[in-house]
Length: 99
Image 1: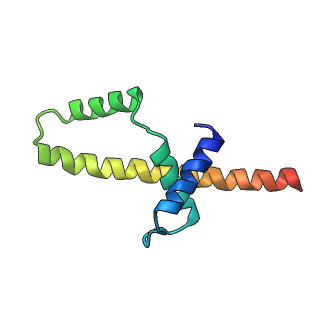
Image 2: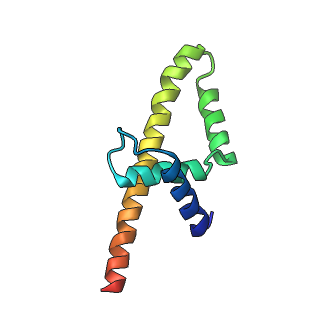
């Protein structure tokens, strides 16, 4: 997605949705908008999930869910932290370039 499309999607999201009460920061809102606009369900991720499910062979659906939900939460939190740090580094770099 190019920057113009992302900016348009972000503006549309802001116009359509009130500020969520559980949002902790502007970076969190940016991350949420980014993930909505960029699907991460690609072949590599599907293959990795298939391997995880194969490793849980023999477990009940409930047991599998007890593993999958925390794994997905961990992955999202890790991705969100990386996104936020990347934005911070980008701002610092822009400040240095313009200094």
